[in-house]
Length: 372
Ligand SMILES: *Cc1c(COP(=O)(O)O)cnc(C)c1O
Image (cartoon, rainbow, N blue to C red; front, side, top):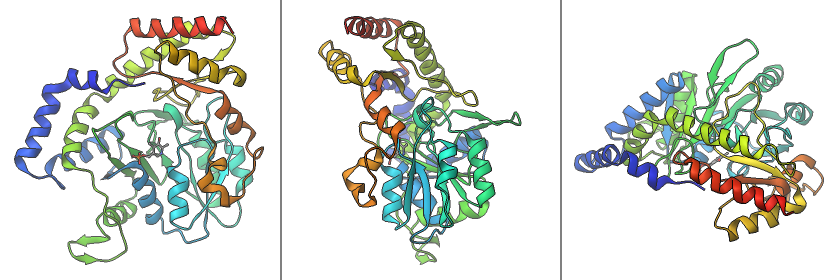
């Protein structure tokens, strides 16, 4: 699905030099590369504060802790995403309120957010899924009208942009009170292990989050609040500095691969190519097709038999996960998410794809579909 090795080999001298510098300095924790990376990422995103942390799940947890939400407070989020959001909400004794998604973009549906608001609602967590932003204009209006916080889960769309109806174009993840992201090896901006970050323009939240990731301390061994230990390794920061310099090139490469797929696959009547949200820039973290649910699994098996990987992101709605059964959701509560889970199929997409690979994948896929 991805080719991290070829990407590494292309940038090997610079990455190896960055890693060696850290090892020689032995500044493994809070070394100079962490400071440099956070400043460079803040400049790239055009925000005052980036707080690196250990992973994207921690980033969500720290964001919620910083907003000082209380047990029982309700947080609205999407049913069609990775488990992290619901996991940290439950750990913090907050109540996840899931809502259905837009069938075109797969992102949280603002109308459904509106319907889910109660007097206990305190925050909304839109997830910018698969590489394009949720409708932050509509979500912003709803949040303002009901005095809610917004945490953008931007693990899959760092480098994507959102153009609001007033014409301004801003980086995804910088619009809500807090943005969170992950540097897991397959994410748009990646390291060679785990990593994550918090993004904000609010100096007070920045200070609080910085304390929370440092065991609640501003001064070592003086703990003012309950925190966690969540740091970005210096070695990972050194790798991230190289990848950040190349992020716009990575995005251009992914968009080029997506263009190729779109041209070859759009005429086929068995599939729907990804729809682009008009207010966003799609960076194609995933290239996700919709296929008739009756065909999807057999197409995936046949692709596999012919050596073509594909993935189903995501096979089960959060509402139907065993770990979340206590919430009492039932089959049928989220018709769009449930249908997507049976229809989506993601094809390989990464920064190192050439036309030969793309041609092979398209030829085999079209061949399979034409025999259905
Ligand atoms: C990957 C991901 C996360 C979690 O990031 P980790 O670094 O793996 O903890 C959270 N939310 C979304 C949408 C993700 O894709």
